[in-house]
Image (cartoon, rainbow, N blue to C red):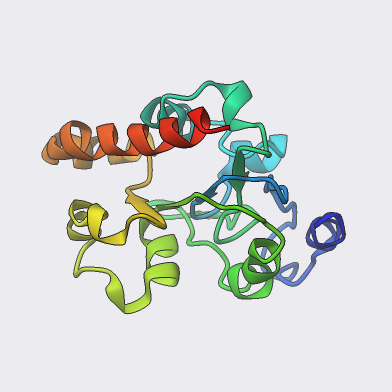
Length: 190
């Protein structure tokens, strides 16, 4: 694992498009894998995954503190794109398409006992679920139980999604309790 992580830290595949600064945290012992889209600008600058308001929301959704979340023996964090993709007209650009095919299988092959993979947002869901996603992210998240026990699908916890959260109150009532139960069961089984 150490060798692969060193390779990733040195990766310059996308250098002509973005400023490389791969951000991830994973070990051979990680029990819960979190796959989001790509680091935002704050995360890019600090080098700490989910070190922003989206991360605060995610930890709240999971009901875990920072110490637990950043324990890479519990949580493995590997986004679809390891580097900040840049700003677009309506937020950050999509993750660079090179990262996941280049690195994900190599990383996951090193992790010994994954209990749950949390797929955050459409990029991760489309990549890992392939033709099993529904027509919309909302429908995919509503169908979360059909992807268990291996995958748990959720929307991105960005504050930009507050409107989605308000329109889809069922997510907080029905999905988040199940997510918290799944995470809690893994944490308590150590």
